Image (cartoon, rainbow, N blue to C red; front, side):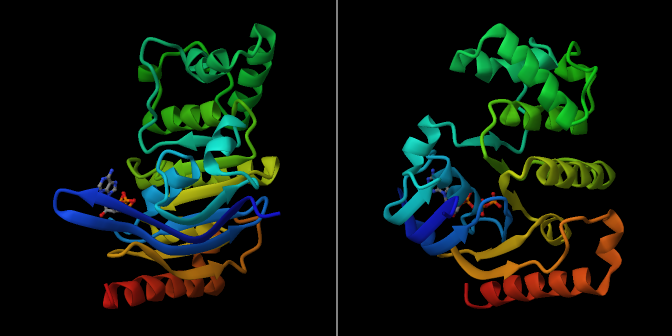
Length: 257
Ligand SMILES: Nc1ncnc2c1ncn2[C@@H]1O[C@H](COP(=O)(O)OP(=O)(O)OP(=O)(O)O)[C@@H](O)[C@H]1O
């Protein structure tokens, strides 16, 4: 069964300047354990699609299923964790306290919370930093903490909206490697929004190229790269060819926008 299944999904915002077609006829099927990136210029509907999966927006047409349920039911079943562009950690809580917060709201016991916090901190390589406050950590470490928070209640889907967009390239490279390792280890299905062609190609098993006005999918590219990817893979002919294919897709979309 597909983890995410979109058929003819449309979403039109009614604004003072008239309708904005944020998504038009989006068809997509994501299998369990896939790493899917959404790439395209500003305004092509990447965030709107991710938010629709998370039931933060409601499509105005078509059908969208998440784990076989409508997005609202999937949200109630805690089908996914969501990572935003900014880490969004509470400054008055420690790192452990921040990761703990959703678990407290969901009613997990103290012992269960402690076990989960230790496990996800280890997964994002932040063990030993639990007692620190967010401002005592670098930007990259803060974003790792926000990923740990999204992982703590064990959803099989991780939705990430440009999580590394605000970080410098060296930190971003390290986090991309760490995220791939985490994905291989956990087998989660990941939906990842990015503006970066190398990031999309490095991380994904499937690259969804989108285009604006109206927001739509112009190409879906299945990656031939192996799951085990050292950073040096970016210099291989296979990687460069794939990046070229994505760039072509983006250009195509731009031509008829
Ligand atoms: N709540 C809203 N009300 C009206 N229009 C909206 C709303 N949210 C998004 N839009 C419009 O829908 C379109 C798609 O927006 P969306 O944020 O999904 O694009 P995006 O591809 O994620 O862009 P970016 O890369 O800049 O984040 C844009 O034209 C945007 O202005």
